[in-house]
Image (cartoon, rainbow, N blue to C red; front, side, top):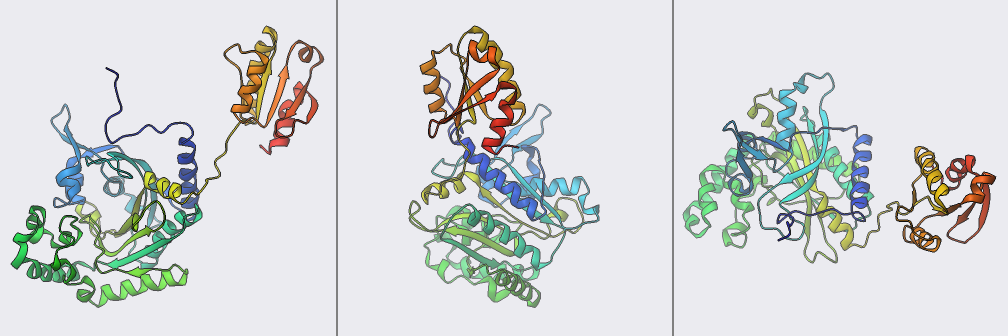
Length: 425
């Protein structure tokens, strides 16, 4: 029996990988403009990292992690999300001691969650994430949100909707927690087992439950906005003011809680509505996580960030029929005639490729006609025929495939000619 790809994973093949490269390059360019630097962390970490940061009551930790015991008997987990690893690295490498704070970082890499595979939700998926650690200035919250919005809009997506909320500081959250416990406790036996377990530990997670989302008590649950103290309220108002200053529209949703325990104060999601999605679909989410560095053994260093699935981003682009300006085709296809030409073509291609040109030749001993057909299939901008006569004269004819026009140039000048015509540098 043939070996098949594991369930919930995918092969990203040529023709599709170029789209991945384009959006990843756009992410890197945008992060450069916002002065965020790339960080690369291990694909697996100690299980304790995610238990302490993501939270024992979350679905991720309870149900979805790929956890294994290594040969030393240590519990290891394939990373299910990126923030915990970035903050662990920030603490371990003492980046809190750098003179320029906040430490502005981004990552692109695979994450792993054991869940039922479905459209836009894989067991191995690729996340792009941004983290700004070391500042509790509300303007950095607005900056992180603006970066996420600009990524989507710059790629051509329409119908974007930004939803924000405040989860409050520690005092506000504790007061809200007690109100939620009082609200749900009399009828908690009507809720799923997960919600019953979370009631005392983290009742805010009940609001994020997918099984009980239609329960009547969900509609009447106390709003966090009614429990914000003055500091939290003022902070949230400043975030809103900065977003408005950048002409970024938003809606406030008191029910937005996010799924991870480390969030507090600002929380946000970016959604999209349009053909191919039906209902509004969440593209990304994030928020502030003051206290996470201390939980992982570091000093006080408040942070904020977001993460998005590149798979879901590409789905959104496809659903809206957005054509990415992915570079396709060859600059030149070198057609060879005769054994000597085939031999000389190796050094000619080597020279052209070293000049940054995308070129190809035949490796299957095809006839001339078949080579030209291959040039057409590969969408070559130009073709060059090299045979005995061309090698003796040192001159070749270059055919422009779009209109069939031809010009001559010396073989020695071929790279310069193609570089000029294709705009390569």
